[in-house]
Amino acid sequence: MGRRPPLPRSAGITHSSPRHGAVSEAGPVLLPEQIDRWRNRRYHRQADLRLRSLPQALDFVNDVGFCLLFPARGIELPTFWEAICGEARPLPRRHHNDPELHSLWRWKDELPSQGLAFYGKLLRKRPTLISLELLPHFYALSENYGDLSDYLLEYEDGKLSEEAKRVYEALLEHGAQPTSHLRRQAGLAGKANAARFDRAILELQLGFKIAKTGISDANAWRYCYVYDLLPRRWPELPSRAAAIGTKEAVRTVLLTHLHNVGVARVEDVSRLFGWEPSRVDTLCDSIARDGRLWRGVRVEGQSDAYLAHASLAQGDERVSSEPT
Image 1 (tube, rainbow, N blue to C red):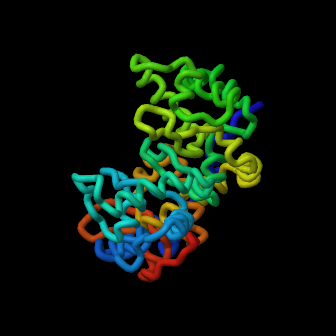
Image 2: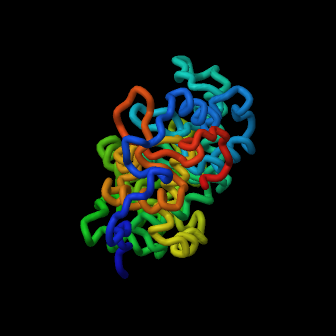
Image 3: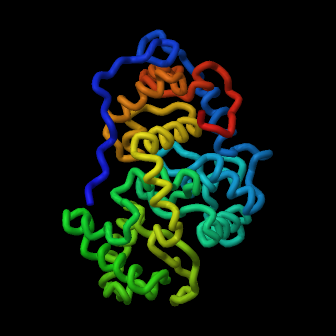
């Protein structure tokens, strides 16, 4: 079984015209407050848009496609926390009696437990929610083909650790398990193995091999995650990913991200998704020719050139629910 091909390169990069965002000194200049207004609406950082129920939380994840659980330094993304608060609010020092934080803990467990969204450590190794519409696109960019034995190829190539292999095989043999049981089945129980087990779980999440499927009280704290193999959680996922393909998956993820943040630098996109900057550049040229993003956009007071969502670059701050 072969590997997925790398992100496609064009035979020769031709920059788009200035109207479609080619890098040039004549590119449009956006004000920081324009970008803030765009993001506040997309991120639901407004009192009238704050999330008040699980259905609204699901609608938010489906709308933005993917978001972090909490804000993180150096990462520009919508967050579940700010959408629940309806504002950019610091985390409270006292967690137990905060109603917004209580809602966040409950909904971030209920969404994956009910199979409504993917939740795990992903983007920059941070807790991330992904909609079921975008999940096949992320899966299409992974090393997986959907066969439950795919992991063996990665292990043989030195791309999967021994600990991750053990955890994966424990799930493969015994089915979905709470972490307390999974540690024992993988031979990684006890304090001495805690860090090894945690690294294996993170590795398997980053590789889109496992998913959180529920909550269990089967440990001393009466709270732990239940994991299963990702293709068993959503059996149709591999075929949906295969139908999308790598090039379309990258394009959709990038456009969704830009629709959320409004503007971003190529290096920020590269760092967030782990894509090579040269390949992001090539893809952006192609999308810019279609008029769906602009290149060479400037932000007042900054010297960097940005990618910008076409509507924002053209001065239309109305935020649609579609990344196109």
